[in-house]
Length: 75
Image (tube, rainbow, N blue to C red; front, top):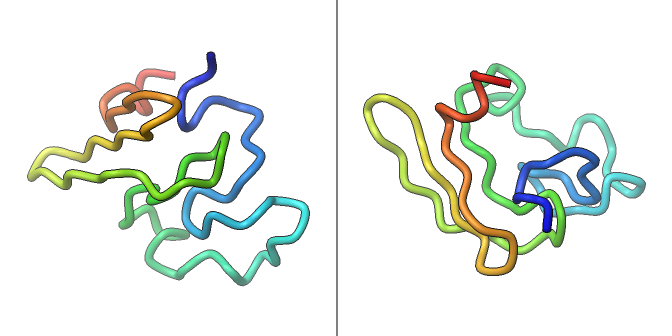
């Protein structure tokens, strides 16, 4: 089973809207600058539980598991 942010994503991770229906300006400016963690699962569009720490963030989807910001930088 793919993780919450595994490619290909079906939903916008900052909006929860299906990517085919999401307009490019729907992404908040802070997210475009890399200042916001993802709030929605890219696989199912559900809201994730997000914990922001001084050194990054972690997020958990009830269906697709956990992801941590440290994992994102090692890809």
